[in-house]
Image (cartoon, rainbow, N blue to C red; front, side, top):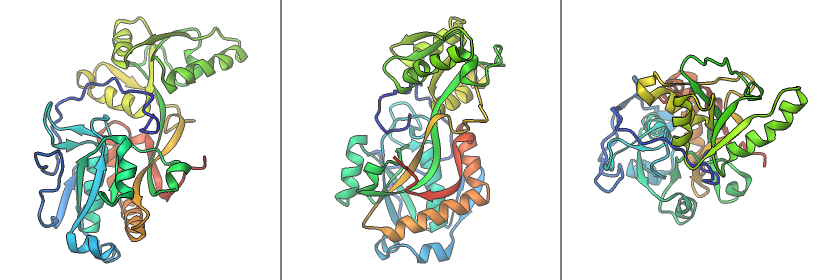
Length: 316
């Protein structure tokens, strides 16, 4: 799941990724940049400043030229380090932030921050916004505002070529399936057993593992036919493991964002309503011109992108 409870740990090793990024300081942040660039190239697209959106920003941000963004690293594919042991940040959230910043004509300067400290830091004014695969929830809406950019839940990873022709959860009935212990994905599989019975099929033979990487090894060796994990992690693993030759992400048309998907949002301080509005309009512009889709596709998770940049979309 996204960073809603940290109950499902992505078992994907953070790889050394050769991606286009904006240079970062040695303290794990992007705050060393001086003036905003006239244009930024992200996922092969050159994003330019929209003067009207820039003019709508809070005066303090226009004067500083920077939006201070908190993020918890690593959490692939949303947040990663460019190199093992390094401090330069990359990932889906970082790339999308750079594109939004370019559209607004300011820097989106990312700084690593422990996840449980992000919202308090926003409340204290240390940061203006956060991009950290954060689930939009009613509880969090009490203290921050969200601009929602994705919907993500659980996904199914299978061997390349999908030899068992799995397209839905009930296709797993009667088969051995791997999952990390004590996760929402295990709960999902347990709940699916009733659907198997209702369909007159044998139950799923669930195999739990301490880490998702162990479940992936079981899938590689043929001990299980699928691994159920967060959909963003499944998409990234399918794209990167053995250069995309090991696994495949199942795309269920009835659950494009994944099973039990919830909205992920850019959290913005409630003290900066003009920033929330500008970010929402900038994101919508990136959705409309196709830039956002290219960023999501770069990380193997095109299906979790939203078509409309909503605000505070969570309903529970």
